[in-house]
Length: 172
Ligand code: RP5
Figure 1 (tube, rainbow, N blue to C red):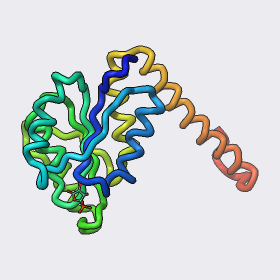
Figure 2 (cartoon, rainbow, N blue to C red; figure 1 turned 180 degrees about the vertical axis):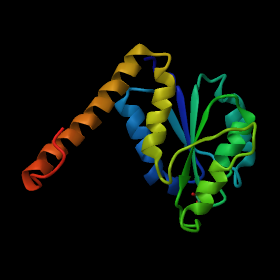
Figure 3 (cartoon, protein in one colour; figure 1 turned 90 degrees about the vertical axis):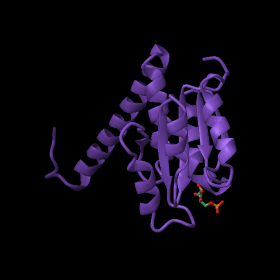
Figure 4 (tube, rainbow, N blue to C red; figure 1 turned 90 degrees about the horizontal axis):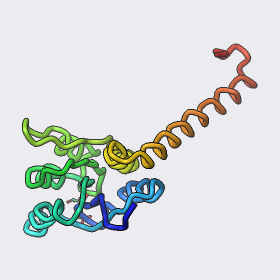
């Protein structure tokens, strides 16, 4: 894959980075080039508009946007660009238990979808971005299948381990 970023990871604040790092880690794992920066819907609204407006022409294919509290960033970016936007609700210091972030990102009005992952689930956002790109890239698709196979094998190892302590466990 060329080195031009295909995925843009943006977040409302650098305080979101410890969570959003997991998206970057998964894209690195799948060898997907990405860019990462802070774009705040409320504090840098013009930067947000500029980022979303130029994203497609700069070669991005998917945007991952994380934010907490009154989390408008993913929805606003989705309203400006035709690229798919994956939203990561973050349980931030200004969040009321994470529900505000989840609902702000999840409950988009008809016409402007945001693919919302679970609270703090930046890892899944990275995997989902790779999955979208994998629909058009056989090598990436194979890497995603290998990842799923690995998850499967890890569970089967746990099943075997459980059998040693629970002989009455399901044995198929
Ligand atoms: C949101 O406010 C950010 O996405 C972050 O989750 C939250 C708190 O930001 P800081 O006050 O830590 O910069 O816009």
